[in-house]
Image 1 (cartoon, rainbow, N blue to C red):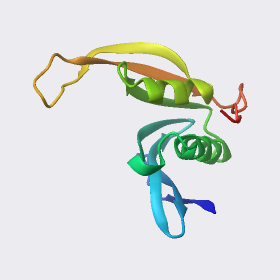
Image 2 (image 1 turned 60 degrees about the vertical axis):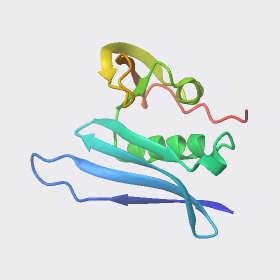
Image 3 (image 1 turned 180 degrees about the horizontal axis):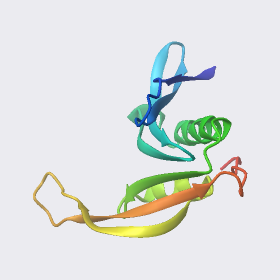
Image 4 (image 1 turned 180 degrees about the vertical axis):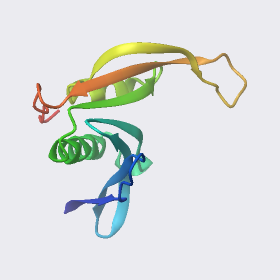
Length: 136
């Protein structure tokens, strides 16, 4: 059985709150998301799924849990950045309702010394659009 957990660091005046959502089965961590929230906006800083469970809905479950958690905090808009070359992540975020709102040229520097890779900035307005929770 897949279960999710969420933890939140306390926010201090002038400091954003951070949250982590994770997915585990049989006490084995399969993935997590780290989210930073300030006022009515939040940013997904990173999402990670274990290689052995990719393309099995774990990433979508984590994104859904992070969005629901943010909605529960009164967050109005959720942002993230993703490489233009990360087709699986782009499909995942589109399925969750995120839309491209910008592009950061040369944002990622490949470790192999290749040319810089652009990032797309995506956003989801939580108040206006319910999550697209669907099966593949």
